[in-house]
Image (tube, rainbow, N blue to C red; front, side, top):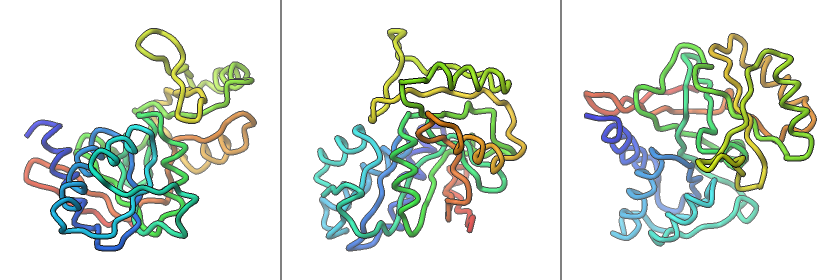
Length: 228
């Protein structure tokens, strides 16, 4: 199976965790797209009822609406039963890097307000240590160059994320993304604490101690790993 088939496999498998009446966080990304498609099909077929989706990006919201999934914002619900999302890297300690799709802020808001988090990935996303995938950091435009220079001084090898036309990419909240090319993150908690303390940073892509279950697409089928 190719990578897309592995993504489809875990995306469809993850819907098994969704039960009638649930409020479900819907993540962002190519793997999640398969999950949302499968969820929409089950709702349309009457197999799942009274499902409310809480989306993490405009892209996912548009897809869910087209499939007839009822949506509410995170502020309109009193809880989220389960969030299903992708990840760009997952370490052996079940820490993650997310934000390759520039939706890390909304993703973290939804994830931290969820009773349970499931990450769905193909096997290429499983690593020993985080860091080979550039770490996204969302920053407000005002003062962003100062944050960039601070990252350079720390040896984080920062780059502003750009669109295909060369302009700076804007997130759904009209912020910039600075990607940190760290290669290996030996102490993710220490790095997260440092980033949390920097003025001008809105959010970072380190998702630590958050995921409960990881579904990995492997050649012989989906593998379910219980993280915590």
